[in-house]
Length: 440
Image (cartoon, rainbow, N blue to C red):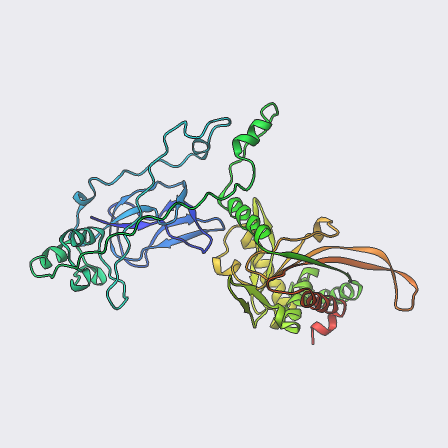
């Protein structure tokens, strides 16, 4: 029986994806590393490579199919000695998924149509007694199990030493039967269903039955955002710290630097200074440069700062690594590149995963202040409002006008206590109000 090629998990958060495009056709011979398909994840479109060599026997999932679960078979690969006869019973490729057809009709009752049978899980790869993985075709594993043979005692003749049908049949006469397996343990009782995150879809639809509305199906990105941020607000003990920051010195320095850098095509933004200020503050308060890891805290040495970028239908948080040691012009150039590719959904997973701290800036939209939701496993996120001219009392007690920016630091209390969070925010404020010191 041919080897199943499974829908890959191309990022840690990926649970399903869209098979956007096949790069091979049935009958093509492929080798390890050859491109097989383009897969759309919840974040980006990525190329999927073959892990083995053989002939593409059948494509099980059609181009454009959405909602393909990770580890679902998407193609069959013929190995040496196998032919199309081995896949005669395999299912034909389904037509592209129709999201509208998949979604329940408004007012429909659960169970009104028979549910599709769940796909059988792929057989687990056996392991030798030394813990090393044994590579064998599904048919070889099945025959060995039927005849009570240990795959660890069979030498494979297939690609990369893979055990195929002929190897098992050749070993049948001489192999020692495997010991009988222990009786299977009784299946555990099913866990209680989780409480719903809100009213059921049918309940909400019924509330608006007499109103005109458009129903919008959730794409992968929106489902991921809903799940992660819902989990964040329910499981992370947020607390909030607020400060006003005087921006006049920073704005004056930025104006002078941009005039000098104009010939190099560099234009610094206030956000570039904010990134640098936060990166330095994480070095000045190293205990706050940390993430929550379930049963422990990881304290990072570099300042890897994530910055929220709004795109159509969602957002990305690309990460600027080692930001504490980077120049403002370098940070500015990389941020522009990351933001542009984020909007095209061309970021690789390593470019938007990681970091210990995040920045969300809505000042350019005229928002004075807001509270941001922590992006786990980060320890904190800084919400940045607009710089606004306001009356302030100067050091001499005189009333003056200054450009004031309001910021809110959302903190995970499991990682950072109140006093430590206050120290971190004070360092950020000091860096922004004394911008020349950041250039030293």
